[in-house]
Amino acid sequence: ATPTALLVGTGRGAQLGILIKGPQVLEATRRVDTIVLDKTGTVTTGQMAVVGCAAVQCGDEDEILRLAAGAESGSEHPIAAAIVAAAALKGPVPAAEAFASEQGLGVQAVVDGRLVLVGRPQWLASAWSIELPVELRAMLDTKEGLGQTAVIVAWDGEARGLLAVADTVKPTSAAAIDEFERLGLTTVLLTGDNERAARAVGDLVGIADVRAGVLPAEKADVIRSLQQSGRVVAMVGDGVNDAVALATADLGIAMGTGTDVAIEASDLTLVRSDLFAAADAIRLARRTLGTIK
Ligand code: ADP
Ligand code: MG
Image (cartoon, rainbow, N blue to C red; front, side):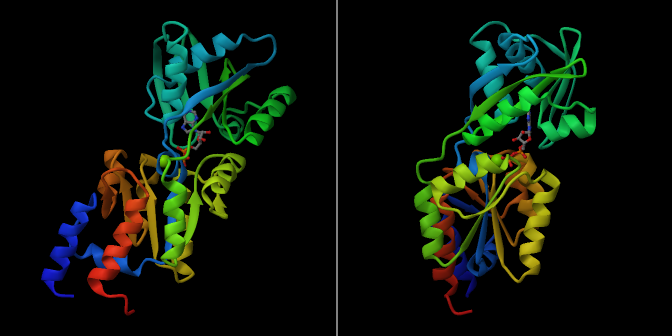
């Protein structure tokens, strides 16, 4: 394509709400045959809400929520925002000290003099040697069976309860995924969330290939393995945890509402955070550069 055609394509992209890092990006966009979608904040709104709270061993549910919110107040994760918002409805959120977070695993902080942990059960087991009591394991299975994301709340070395959060699928996601199919693309759902929550979203939007429980560092491995099998891969994401995968993909696409790190790692930004614009971008690139391979 001539430089003029590329510039026209870039300008047309801006009109469609697609910010293109440079005209050369259109070439990668045209060649894409596989589109990998992050779940939370990409296919779903990322606006999570607490939908369940349970305590074990004579615990108190309000105390689970209150201490978890203290620990989560330093985190930018959508799960953290949901927990802090739910706790704030019931009373003041306690201050936390010594906050630290592990990407895609959970958070830790000292709240009311207790070392509070909130995160994935596997993380509590492997990093803290905290196993789940049978009762709590059963509660976790129930929540996950409903397609919810359950995080375990522990303090002073013991799992005390769980908080279940849920998210909603964006209104345009299913139609956008239909459109990807019409464009001949293979769609993959990629998430750090649990298998059942991921499948529930996959079923709602029509994605059969679901890769769940993937740690942030492993997301890029999934992209690389698709590339090694000969695919030209676009990755769509919004989070800090997606940045390496976005940079690894042949085409990185960030949601406009995403984190700065995700936007910087990407070639395209969807201003309205609408997946449909990703299909528009691919159609535009094919039209600008011609579809002949
Ligand atoms: P996604 O790929 O859906 O964006 P993440 O990689 O951010 O998911 O997170 C994966 C899992 O790690 C979450 O489902 C949750 O169990 C746990 N996790 C991540 N961040 C937090 C947090 N701030 N608090 C509690 N759990 C967390
Ligand atoms: Mg995300």
